[in-house]
Structures are given as structure tokens and as C-alpha cells.
Length: 69
Image 1: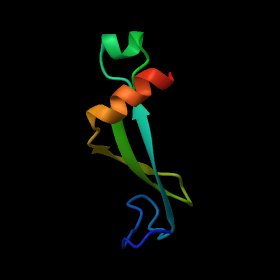
Image 2: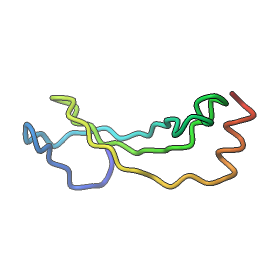
Image 3: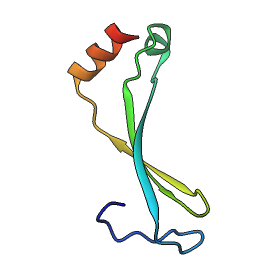
Image 4: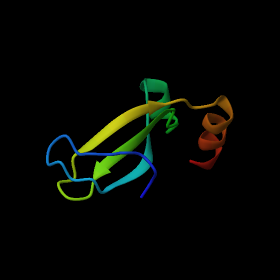
């Protein structure tokens, strides 16, 4: 668990997990399989309610993602 004071808005539980996910943006990024959108999430471990927060992505990570896909 992290060090944030978390309380689930659906069930009131205090335990959570965090992580990140990437997604494609527009048509060109889908064609070239470049996942240029990055999101962080916080999910309740009891009811699985999940909140997503948009994170910044750098050009270098987008280039690296392009060559590794």
C-alpha cells in the first residue's frame, strides 16, 4: 500500500492498489501501435472501484514504445 489517505467513494474501504496503463490515441497511433496516452489508477481492493488519472508522457517513451512494438 502507498502512503495516501485513501477511502473508497463506493464502499468506504481503506485498502487500495495503484498502477498505470497506456492506451492509443488517434488513428495514426493505432496503425503504428504507439500507446501515447498514459494513465495512473487507484483501485479499491474490496469492491474494485477504480479511478483513472491522466499522466504526462514524454516523447522519448513514445519513441521507445514505437520501436518495441
